[in-house]
Length: 333
Ligand SMILES: C[S@@+](CC[C@H](N)C(=O)[O-])C[C@H]1O[C@@H](n2cnc3c(N)ncnc32)[C@H](O)[C@@H]1O
Image (cartoon, rainbow, N blue to C red; front, top):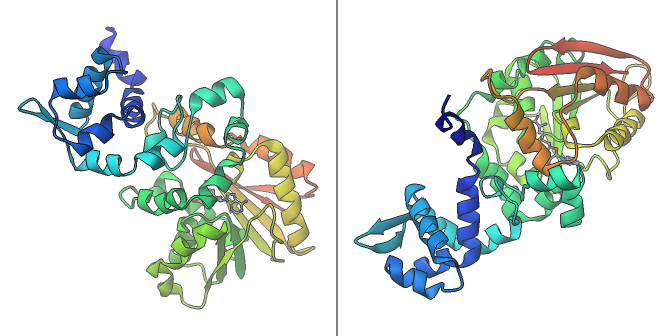
């Protein structure tokens, strides 16, 4: 096997090229005047000319710049980047690889060297708090939302509708609903009760703006609830879908205990569902997990690991309602 067959696996180059170009002033100078290759290199004389030339060529190959008759121009992609340099600089670091293509400053390198809490150490707040506070970041959730792939089957949401404890409930409170895809899937699959979707305050406008809720008028409620700091309303069925992987063990236990005080004695239950694979491709499993690890302090856990955390939080009965290659669902009483 030749080296060519593995080189693509090391392609962290593109985001690094873009970050370095944005931070070095290259985009500013190309945006402000139509200069030739040589003139640009001359103007940025504090940068290594050899690397700078390669950067410009790489940006041409990536479609951000266009080298035409020796002039260097910005394409539409490049103009978009040039308009947003301040934002890009605020969310990327020297180590950022995937940060430019995501909604937060991600740095696998830092997690590797500094441990699970590196994000909070560097940014003085947790990832989700930063996302909730910065309008650019929470707006990018909506922009990044793509209906192009069938996330219902990739994430095996059908497992939730096969979970009677959830699907036959009269009322569900979902915490950390994100864009609301899980709630929508449950509703469109024939759920006949009411469902409250909730998330951090700045996610709420994105949830309320969706016209798809109109098909289920009177049965969908939307509420801002920070599940670590706000009182969790009393409910008989509370759902957490794909939340735990964001949090370390102690934080999961705190969350379970808070929910325990909110679910009704006797009949109340917590339904916990976690995605364990993020790709249908047999050969790709770790990339999705690594991307998560760049930002949040949790990890993708096995059903046994989650069950142990639930027990530690004082729940007395736990049942496995579903388990597939892509997710598992536990019900805790
Ligand atoms: C990985 S997403 C899961 C979204 C959704 N449950 C799903 O399965 O598609 C995690 C969600 O938790 C939300 N979240 C993070 N911290 C939260 C908190 N303290 N209170 C409420 N929601 C929170 C985030 O805003 C985000 O929407």
